[in-house]
Length: 178
Image (cartoon, rainbow, N blue to C red; front, side):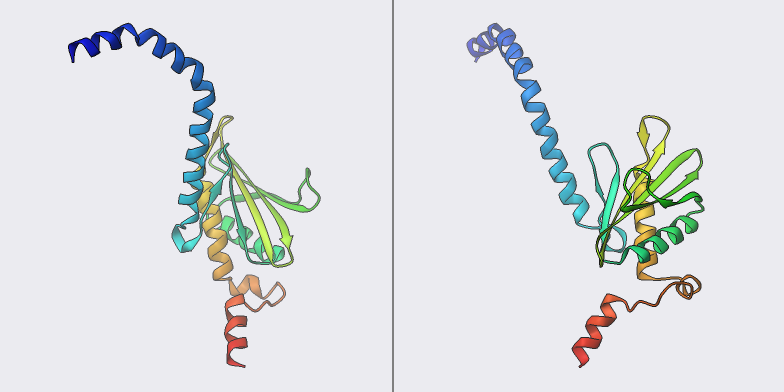
């Protein structure tokens, strides 16, 4: 065993050099594996069965099975429940097919982009910037959870101002009864 340790010491420099040369190739691959595991973990769902996915730079997004107008109303309701002051509510500048709601909370700049994928499917993208370099992932996730909760439990006062929509669950049950 002592001879093998002596041999290892002799080969330490070449092994370290090889690791340094290979690391730019291997390290990015390790990061991809981590992203895959994070995506699987996020898809398992947290509060209310709502999974939140993240891009590599910390931006949260979620797709809902709901029309874009319902998601807009639910997002506004969620932001109001959290006490986030809405500063902009209109068409997104960079994409005319998206809607943007912006707000502020304790020096955080919040932006929610809402985009219709199909007439019944809508994707939201949430960015909560905490300073120049940091994203507040907890706040991003909570905005998505609040939006999901508002979709599941619409406020009657808000619902009276928007077109009536039968929830998908009720439609399934009604079709099953017929």
